[in-house]
Image 1 (cartoon, rainbow, N blue to C red):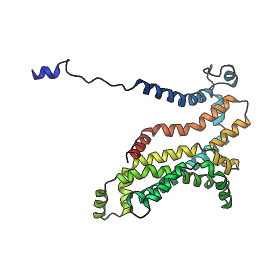
Image 2 (cartoon, rainbow, N blue to C red; image 1 turned 60 degrees about the vertical axis):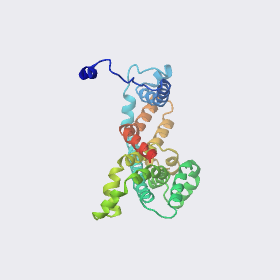
Image 3 (tube, rainbow, N blue to C red; image 1 turned 30 degrees about the vertical axis):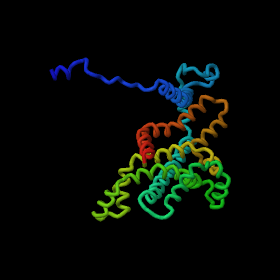
Image 4 (cartoon, one colour; image 1 turned 45 degrees about the vertical axis):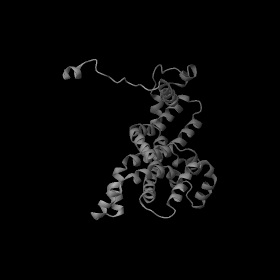
Amino acid sequence: MAANAVLSPTAKRRPVSWGNPLTYALALAVAAVSIAPVVYVIIGGFRTTPQIVADPAGLPDPWVWDNYARVLTQSDFWRQVFNSAVVSLGTTIGVVVLGVCAAFVLARYTFRGREVLYTFFTLGLLFPAGAAILPLYLMLRDLNLINSYYAVILPQVAFALPLTIVILRPFLTAIPRELEDAAAIDGTGRLGFLWRILLPLSRPALVTVGILAFVTSWNAFLLPLLVLGDASLHTLPLGVQNFSSQYTSDTAGILAFTSLAMLPALIFFTFAEKQIVGGLQGAVKG
């Protein structure tokens, strides 16, 4: 009897909940609005300019590879890729290292004014970078940093630190004090505890802030435009503008250049999507 009761097809089954259809429809609409322009730009690079003029929303017929080949054979493109990589990696390293140091102190040390200092950092989220462009340019000029990688890396690190600290502090705070006490008994100092225990356990948050810093730096346009007057130091966003100005009538070529310029950031972001979600969830829970 018991076996029949267990195996009976009439046993109670919980209905599968698919959620609110409106939520799915809204998510699909947002995804379509976000993805459609990217897909259009990538596919547009495989068309010719007459095809785009004749049918802007059509598919390539035939598929043309010359636009991408022409961009990839340009020396300017690869120089701009190198510049973007240097600036983005430098910004990412600076953001992660300084962010971890600041978040570690705010999370694991108790001192007077700690919460005030943390609030000061969080207020940085409300400060738009565009409002500081003019004084920032003047300060960089006085420091003789104009037309150098530092003119882009240092300000980007400064503007990325508030969000980095907001994400990292909850992770570092959530690590039990018992682990720190056990590490101290084993003779591990605070820095050793940070390096051997805190950082490995905070890997999702570190990956999150690193990717956000890298993608934001890779796509930055206004700051490099103002401080990088030397064309040999231009990053890819500036390269897109230069290419568009030089080949105004070559719409297909511009789309191909734009596609290749945003491709590294898209790939980087896509492969680390789960890490980003996990890092942000941990920050919200903390």
